[in-house]
Length: 330
Image 1 (cartoon, rainbow, N blue to C red):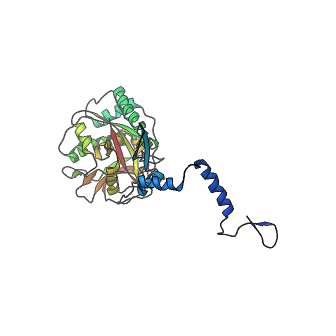
Image 2 (cartoon, one colour):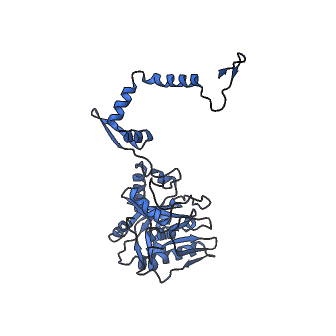
Image 3 (cartoon, rainbow, N blue to C red):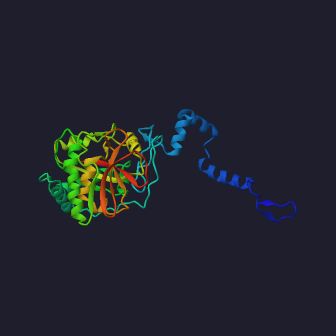
């Protein structure tokens, strides 16, 4: 407030004016906490750290840890996922990402491991896989690992689905996907929704046509399946709105144990959770972003409607109603 030259009443400062008295009080109040610190100390500290390092500490990108009288500057451990379990696009990401359309969403189911393993056995028709107790124990071990990881724990704020894949070795990904896993999806979907149809638009076209994109770590799943049954946690909406190239590109800044979802894991999830992943039109399209189909210009995805489920190729664009997924294995 200022005194008017026309009287002793106080007037509010005009727009844009600076109240130096108020600002002086604020500075004095703040500096009272650091009475023994001088501008010279500021300069000395900045000389030691360097301007860029000091700025990154102030922004929370770096943290200072003290041990045995020594100060060590390390990268800060920050969550890689937001409050919805969606990947925070990393700084410098070049590929396109669309805003997630929350009209297309999933609900977290109550996990009944006995029912889930029974579905896997019934619809995959690959013989006994493991007991429900083993499936639950191995799933809980992965969930415990995620809960203890500050970078990954927010994944659990989104939908997470334990899945199991049978031991299986093969040289042709497309053949395994078409002959075993998509057949299981059709059995499960039409059993769950008796008045609906499953439309496989690539039927008979997958053998010899699918390759795994570079840098997505999906080979880890294939290697584990070759030696035994595999348990994993699938996060279907972790990459909601990411284009196929963005889903692949962001993998470079994720921990090495995180895998980009492809065909086998998403198909088995669909067979085990059809009422979650294909409930109606407002289910997000589920991208098999780890896979290339026919050429580098195409991938594959599931697309649910109120009356049917489609499996079909797609281009590489970013859409708010599509979602890539992530997978963590035990």
